[in-house]
Image (cartoon, rainbow, N blue to C red; front, top):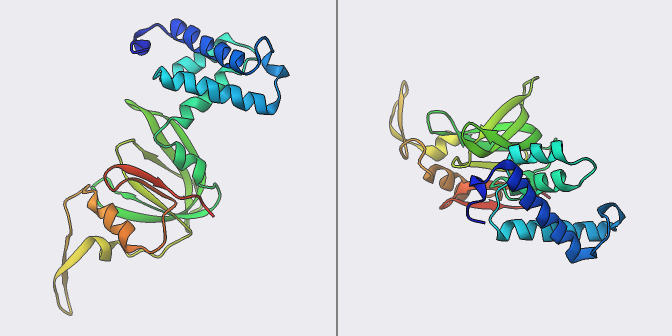
Length: 227
């Protein structure tokens, strides 16, 4: 369905609805969704997502909203939302990082140099931001703070999440000393701003395996299940 995104929302929804009908026919032809067993509902979801994936269909928030407005008591909107989340570049991050746990987040400052945050994750939400369909909104409470903060991670950015509050000396990992005396120490950064080698060096230097290492090491996502 190469021109799917060029179709009207109404036509897009017709196509997506047809795929759900096909998925239900694959599992239990002629049976209403509410009559399916839990196992059958999972099979319908898997079949539905396979159809969407094979057709290279992208589910947008506008399309989900139209489905909500158009269908009452239908599983279609929720299945569409779940597919959209599962196929996000941040899907593994959301599914593998446990909420309300202490973590250490390492990301770039606005100037392009890494810094570490000891914090507690309150929520992880994937939603559009500016021109980006997939952006990760991390709501968290930093160590020693009373209020929640929010970080917005865009698809091209890099970040690392470690389990627990680590005492990470970012300066020693990202800078080198040029000269030093009793009054003054002069340092320089190892690389230019936003160089991805900063994150690679940090992962290599910290013995603990990160829960999430996104867009690190040749833009590959690595995720380890939280224990």
